Image 1 (cartoon, rainbow, N blue to C red):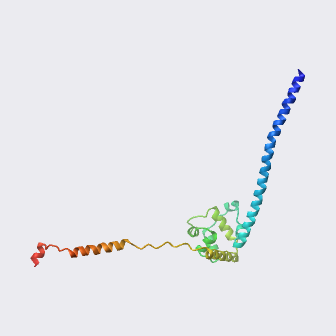
Image 2 (cartoon, helix red, strand yellow):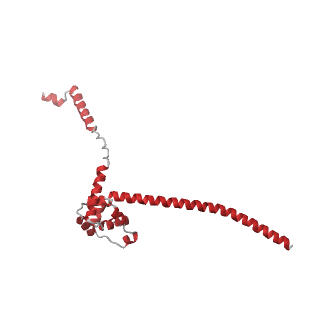
Image 3 (cartoon, helix red, strand yellow):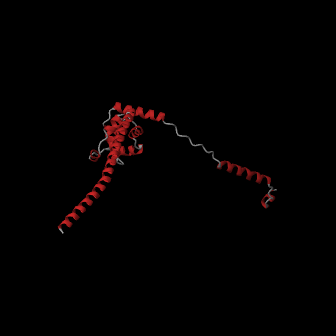
Length: 195
């Protein structure tokens, strides 16, 4: 009986090993595929980062993108309205120009300077990065902004519609005057007495 049990155990362990190797083959294949895909994605990310760096150098916003503060730095910073105004005046910018450079709404910037609202995290990041820029860097950014505007095609103007309603009223008034002039009204008793 011991021989049967031992033979049965060996057969069970052999079948179990066979099943494990089958399942491991499929797992190994998927692991290899995942590694290949991962290495391809890493290569793509590197090439995209190089392209972004080249574009930033061409535009001139390289320093601003590199020195963007982290979320932790932004949380602890409170930006006072007068500091926004002094920063803008330091660089000799109008509200509109500074808003264009920061890529935010000029109305929002104006409200922040007046103390009506407060900038949110993304806008705070932009303001803190702008704070670190020198005057020459700001001038370069302005020049790049002007060239972008010059290169951008002008939007098509909407055709001007002529006012049609006043013409209809004039035509109606003329028609009424002609109708009144052409009809002979009977004399009223008051007009007859005057005669």
